[in-house]
Image 1 (cartoon, helix red, strand yellow):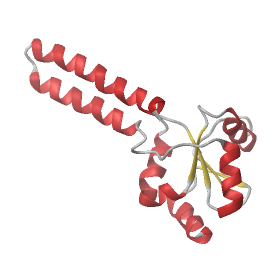
Image 2 (cartoon, rainbow, N blue to C red; image 1 turned 180 degrees about the vertical axis):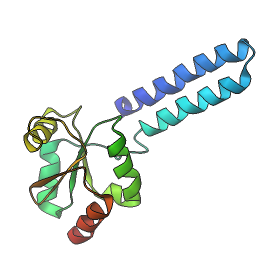
Image 3 (cartoon, one colour; image 1 turned 180 degrees about the horizontal axis):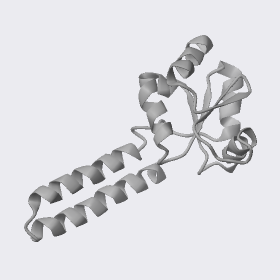
Length: 145
């Protein structure tokens, strides 16, 4: 769990250092704006936005038991972030697999996308769907409940 917070903490630390430099150079307004940008970047890359990722094998095992969709994603992907935000609280019901941390997950995505790591790729009932609409994913979630 600690590793998941390294990047967000680095964003906050770097933003604080740069903002301190700007304050000492006499531009506190720019320092505050820049610090806000770094804090927002930290929040977007934190586990607060994306639920904890699991491995592809574990996600498929859980999917076989409960039928919930498996979402393959990667940090920094604006489409993955958009899907996560649009799913709202329902995002915690989905099984998330970070393809940058799980080579098996990356292999599943490449197999579904002609060798490309296109995310988000959502697998429902063994069928991959690339960058699906959030309403469709919500509908799949309600069917599995």
